[in-house]
Each structure stands twice: as structure tokens, then as C-alpha cells.
Length: 364
Image (tube, rainbow, N blue to C red; front, side, top):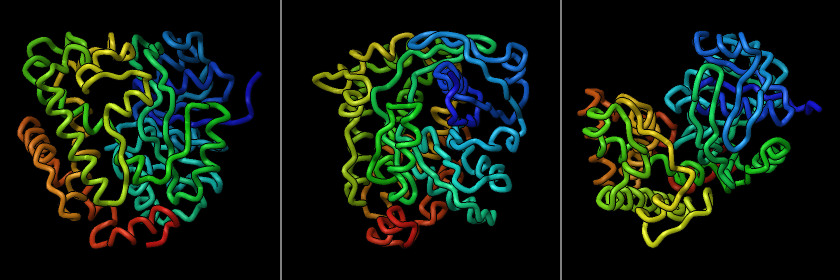
């Protein structure tokens, strides 16, 4: 029996196809949007997505479109499953067509995603009363395995979600839990933004495995083989710097090891052992190139805002700064300029008290 809650899933990559397929198998109406129509054609031809792994079956997707207005019309929940570098563009595309009461969820927001979407809608003059929320991480470890075919390697146990402003979080999570009971409420978007563990894992592992990625075209297990004891030491230092910036902002961020236990039920004496103990990471291959979202997304939308906030708050982040610099060198791009700085998030010059007021009540 089909549930009355309607979802629009924006983005037909690894995560978007997995989420659309999961929701459709669970009996919810799903509309799938992608900016480029080519990726949608196999789904349109088959009328849905074949899902394998933790959940399996054929997922009907009657609407797969590159028309964002068609995708979101009448949908109660808009699930944004694009790289965080696309959040501003998605918000601009959504702004003329949003309807009062709709919930926009960034899956995930990385660091500062909800703040960026809020600011973009404001700049575009959108007056609709919508709720903006961000997830701390993505629900699945998943990969596209063929045309209109996706594999879900693991469904995480719990996904903290926060709305901007925070007082709307309970309503947002209650709505989401009808379909996705893994979602749980978080205090505010500062917590979800700083508990962004992808900021710790993705850029570090990718940059430090650059030679192996280029020589093998990614033919190795990204987490299991890509994280050696030495690389784990650098991951732990990035993690400590992230936590120190959060503490200066008045936020208690969880460690990467705590996150692994919460999301995957795995533990270890140190971060290296915890990663090796995670069966959900086995079989996830490395990117085939260093020109991948683990750098192009996670550096400007995760590491840059953390370092920028650290600078504003007087907290040094030498390891994070070094990774940003290496990413700039590798890609010949200025990620400091492209990234989510405090200026772009509307936080420049605000006191800690004013930042907390902004995320709690939308007043600063």
C-alpha cells in the first residue's frame, strides 16, 4: 500500500538513486530530479530502479525528470542528495517554485549547508514558509552498480538532523521518521555541521592516497586498504582540530570513533582499528581519479568553513589548513576563495551568542 507522504529526491547520483529506491520500495511516492537528463533515461525506460544489498527489489519511480518544478510540485519533503557544492544552485532553482509548508532536507549539509540555503533563498526573494534542515551524514553507504541499478552496502543506525531555526527540528524529524526511522533530532545546525565526519575522512584519505589512486585508477578498498596506521594518525589530528573549533563555538562535537560506533556499531582501540572493524566499509572502492567530490566537495564545503570559523574564533587548524593547501595545489584551484567562508555564511563579525541566536530562532 502506498503511503500518502510524497518525496522529491533531488540528485540521481549514488546517494539519490539509493534513497529514491529505498523510499519507493517502502511504499512512498517518489519523484526523482537530476539536472542532466542522461542519467535519468535508463530509469525512465525501466520505470524505476533495481535496488540490491541491505534492501532489495524493484523500486517504481514514475516521475524522473530534469524539470525541478515537476519534481517538487505537491511534495511534502524535498530531499537534496547532491554534492554540497550544488546546494546554492539547487536553492536558486527551487526558489520560484517552493510551496508553503514544504521541508527541504540536505543529505547531508556538510558544514554550513542550511545556512547557505537560507541565505540563498533570502537573496532570491523567496517568501514561502518552508523548513530547511540538514542531516549530519548520509543514510547509506551506496554505489550505482549499473544503469537504473544501485547497491546499498549499509544502512546507518542513526542520522542526526537539525532544522534552521532549531525550534522546527521536532516537526521535521517527526515527518521524516514516518519513512526513515533512522533520523533523530539534533540540537541545532551547528552540531550537525561540526559532526560532519566526511570532513575528517574524505579529503585526508583521498589526498594521501593520490599516488595509489592515479596508478591503480582506484582499484582498492577505499577505507580498508586506504587507511593505514600512519594515515589514521593524520585523520586523528584533523579530528582533534575539528573538535577544538567546535568547542570554541560552544558545541560539543563527537569524535570520529564515537561516530563510527553510533552509525555502524563498530569500535576499536584507536581510529585505525575502528575503521578496519567496520564491515560496512568493505567493498567500497576508491575513486578512480583525484578529481572527485571527496576533494571538490569536502574541501570547500567542509574543511574551509571549519578553518574559516577557527580563524575567526582564534583557533589554529594547521593540519586542516595543510590539506586545503594540498587540494589547491593538486587541482590548481583556490578552494579558499571558492569555499564556504564565514563571510559567505553570513557569520562574519557575529559573536558566539549571536550565532547561537541565529541558529536557534533565526534571529541574530
